[in-house]
Length: 217
Image 1: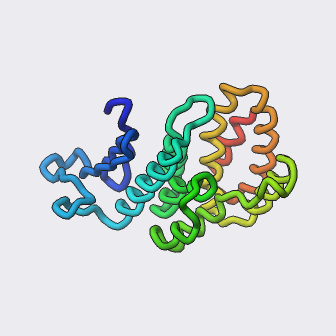
Image 2: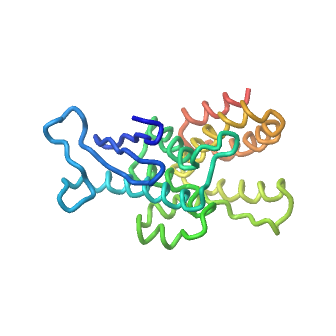
Image 3: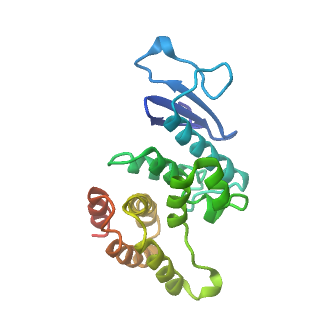
């Protein structure tokens, strides 16, 4: 794949996302070369529900973050690479298709202007929308300084179900990779916030919790 494409593998399908245009193609698993067909078109072989759910979440995240030219801090890469990385981390542990979809969409409501939770519910269903709701910060700038806002958001995620906490752990792990390496001054602040969050994320996947804690050493 060229640098304009990113591959995402799920449910025996290779999903190929063209970053500049946010166009998505899907192919059957390469172990079945005679059964390869473009999906998501009337003439294509349609994938199963769970693959379509995840593929649609990938496409939605790419489109919405792309509309505002959302870029990753420090690297200036397309922002969608972050939720893709989070989803891939979630897929290394016990997960459901809805968790993977929510991981891909976890910043859409918070960071893009056109998508709200009702849209997520209508397009992706109740389970995905509930997870995205838990993963969306509830604090507002008017609530106070960063410390106050982070505590409000911490109390919110503390009440979340284990599936949402697992996704949050994956989010922390991926964010740490860039912050710790590229911004040591902010890392001291973020590390303190992360340790506080880890106190309320113990119901998430234990492997990811341990990995997130290890990053703080």
